[in-house]
Amino acid sequence: MRGVLQGAFALALAGCAAGGSQMQTASVAPGWEVKCIEDHYKDSRRCFAATFGKGDAMNAPFQVIYQNRLGPFLMVGYHTHPTMSATVRVDDGKVHYIPTLNEFLAVQTASEHTAVANRVIDDLVKGRTAYVTYYSWPSAIGKKMQVDLTGFAPAYEHLKKEISKGA
Image (tube, rainbow, N blue to C red; front, side, top):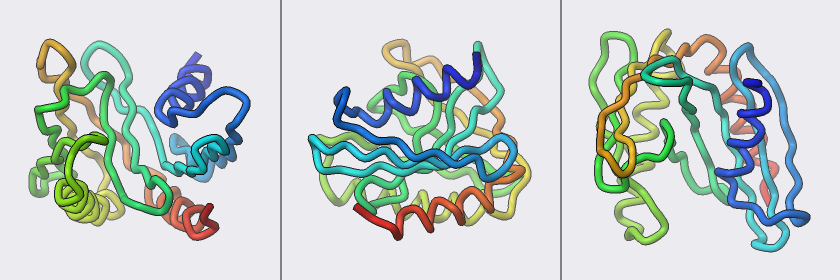
């Protein structure tokens, strides 16, 4: 069931049109998958390293994403509230506030998001557990999850290799 959910979730996030997409998947570390999805209709390529955290209500996704080599962007949880920032804390480190990001926001916000994402990734590579809070839409109720970072470092290295192949 988990594999089915992962596949469905990956396709949903990619926003790909049926029949015009190709997905390349690699399981490079236990618990982590690296995927690249090419959408020939939109001439776009989305690559990400993904896992599921354990937490409130159900297992929730945790992803580091690059869209057409732009990024990284962090996506955490399900149905996230568009106006409330998620937080990520790795082990006993600093709490990072993840700026909200959607296609209607300015480039400045995307740059701010990637700057924060890069700092978080530096912590993720060295860490054991990420403690994440995100807010569901439309209720704005905070959800908490823990993400096992075992295998994240090799998954992220593989992701960077996939990104360099480009589209």
